[in-house]
Image 1 (cartoon, rainbow, N blue to C red):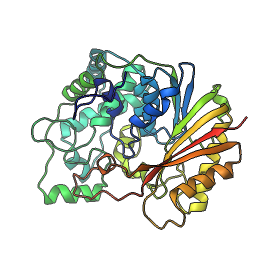
Image 2 (cartoon, one colour):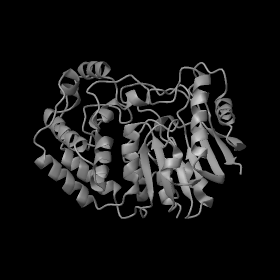
Image 3 (cartoon, rainbow, N blue to C red):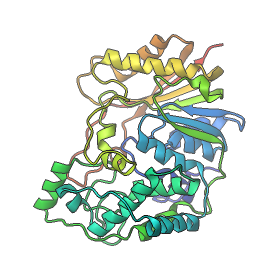
Length: 375
């Protein structure tokens, strides 16, 4: 089935799960789906920078197993949910249980929290946060967690409530001082949003009867530069990924509210120890080379490597394609570059929300690199 041949302006219901939670770097689903047209059922796909699991969901649409690795905890929490097919009533039942049974929970204090969420809504959010921190999650709970991550913050819509927060971008979390200033200047105060009602709405919309059958696979919260891929006990036929673009180094900070919900700090943490280095192009290239070397350990001969890559138009000394080619050559493990072709400029609406009147940053044209692992 071609899930993308639908009426103009409408998406096939099976694609809704891929959008369960917005993420700043939205790897377009159609790209890995089309790439995997020639894959067979016994193939296994690996994405060492899986983000919110788009390559993994494309593999599921093709009926193929996949693995994904990402150092961002928010990304892996969202990606995990894309392996499941579950009745929405079970998700709502679990949410109802958590809200009724969780009596002790931490509530953050301060001007940001007073203006970001209605007090009652914040209490409900904190009940879920405390519950998810306390135990190993079932598949219903993992799905519920991803749903709440997706509705945690976003714009105030005129007709229906779709997010739990005061006015905020849906894709990234603006910093507290800026948010407070914006809300005060625009006289925006948080109204109560019923979390259970919103969860029911989202669960019913996303987990519909059109979802594809579940496939085997796994999402790992880890660093692909250091991970020993042999420990996965799998051999891969495809590596499909999109590494962080050079100059984009605020993934952690832009997701700080969702990271808080997953048990993180009540404040923005500006450390980035688990991220690809952006200090210089040479160090960035070196870090990428570690990933290509590591992935090759778990790949069969003639494994296909497909990478979509680009960069911010900052102080680049090399073109993005030169940076990527150098990283593959530096890995020196047998990846042979076969094709390099332009993919066009990324859609700004898919990259950055503008509810706080920020203009999206411009991007250098993206390109796709195809390589194959020699015997």
